[in-house]
Image (cartoon, rainbow, N blue to C red; front, side, top):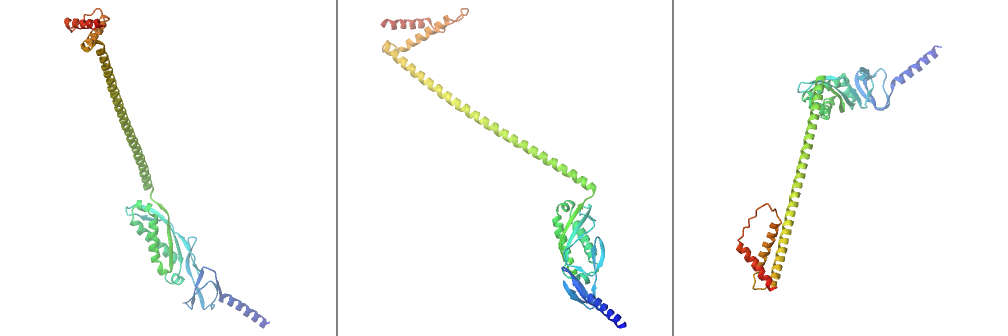
Length: 316
């Protein structure tokens, strides 16, 4: 009976010993093993054999749901820390709240365990102080419009500072930048003023362009009217000149005919002059009978012209 109990106890102890000696590490995880309090090995994913009681896994502080806990497994995947909002002051003395997301990865488990006591807390404090320094060198407007610049600077500083902890900071993202209510109100008024300014400028530019186009249209219309009047005057002058030439040619032909009719011994001018006198007297006779008409001609000249007409018709 005693032998049976001893055998069962030995089997149980053997099972416990094997269970404690065999350590299975999941993929993307590792453990730091200390032998009698001194670093011994970094376990790789898969099956690993250790000496129970003599070998012990070193614990590390991790952040789980906003609480710091101890764990003997080290996660080698990229992790995200969401830090609480913190107050920062800009270069122009504006206080605002900022919270950030930090993406990092443990690349050297040995340093992450032995070079820093509380890794998440150290990263959080370093991020806060670095963020305050960066924001303190920038004015409010620059802070609100330069998130990429802040992220780049913050990632560079954190990556250099955490290198000795075996940490690789991949990227940093600013979630919220919240200025005070008074600043937000002032910014809204400023934005409204800028919009009104742009609207006024666009309106004035439109009116200016409309006036320019109107003046150019008036100018073109004036030029076209001037050209039309010029062409009209030229054509009218050419027409009058042509009419005078034709009239003169007709009168020359008429004088030639008269000369042929009265003969070369008689001056055709006397005939024409007498004809004009007769036409004028006819018009005077048909005019207003109550008016006195003074003829600015000598009676002897008039009678001489009439006599000349008489002589002309004698030949006929």
